[in-house]
Length: 437
Ligand code: UD1
Ligand code: MG
Image 1: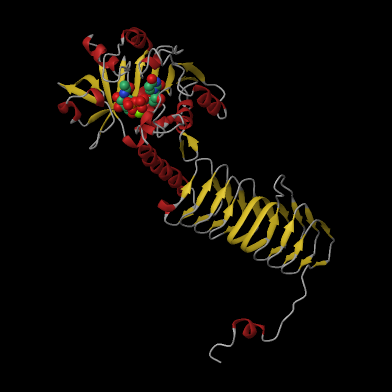
Image 2: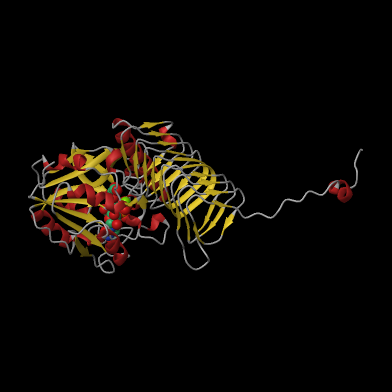
């Protein structure tokens, strides 16, 4: 959608979020791999260039985190000690444009399409509402004679008001002059001793201003106050992510068991089996990820992975077969077969190489990490340890059970380290005695 130069957006992100029961600021809790506030800003940016984010609680952490993703956000500091609450949060905001859209930082499911509706209505005040069978936690919207009278917060509500199922979704569009008039008039005469933005509604109503209620969908406007809300919102966002990729041609088996972060991308023909987790900036291209595998921040191209494999960050896996119980970390594998339980960390393995079961790159000496480089057409026997730094040139054969301690194994060689096998006749019977003949 095209950006609207008449709209400023304010995102309230300064609250303590006590119901989250966490040391971390509420808006920094992750949803599908990114903080809640990231999702709200991302959708807002599709609508306006004037994005104002109000911060106070853990403001340094919130600003630092958001600066990782965005470079054109206007951070506004709330004087939360003297003016706590969503109304207090608006006191220091000076939006550039005449229409001000206010969003809560705890509504990560918001999409630009879902807020577009606010921009198509001409009014001094538009507020969002939805009807819920369980309105717990939300401000109740009191409507009389078809007109919005006020919003009553749960903690201030009478028993009758608590039974109202129409709630304030928490997004508003105000004209700048309405805000400038009413924000300074707010008081904190309520159960929480906070300055409520929602009180602007009853003040405006008393002045006979028209308040337009806009019915919205909970799937886009759900507020996240607790860790339970967070998990419910994440399910909704997961469904969106997976639906998008399935529409784009990815096959998913039992998609409700699959977890895919928003930064993951797929190309070509991909098949994702049940219980797979894919995170970070992973790219999967023409590949098959088998059941219960985890892929983090890696590229998987023309390959099959798992079941039960763990591909850790910075791996690039191409034309390769990775079997069960194989862990790869920062591994660049091109045309490789590693079919069974192995650890391949800080390594480069080239075309035609077969990695036997139980192979371990010993990349860490307790202080530093070292690299293993393995050439083309190498045959690594089972139970091989490669104590890095080590280089295996092309066409090398490593005998099962070998420990390669350092240096370079030259092209075409056999590497073998074994103690000679001894068999001692009847030792078993001498040791345990002869049982039942
Ligand atoms: C708020 C609304 C409620 C609505 C609900 C929708 C008020 C008083 N209540 O309640 O009517 O149904 O959202 O989700 O507005 N914040 C600040 N500074 C503060 C306090 C909060 O910036 O001093 C921010 C928070 O970081 C949060 C947002 O404002 O992102 C909403 O605050 P929260 O405490 O979650 O309000 P709710 O109780 O959910
Ligand atoms: Mg909330």
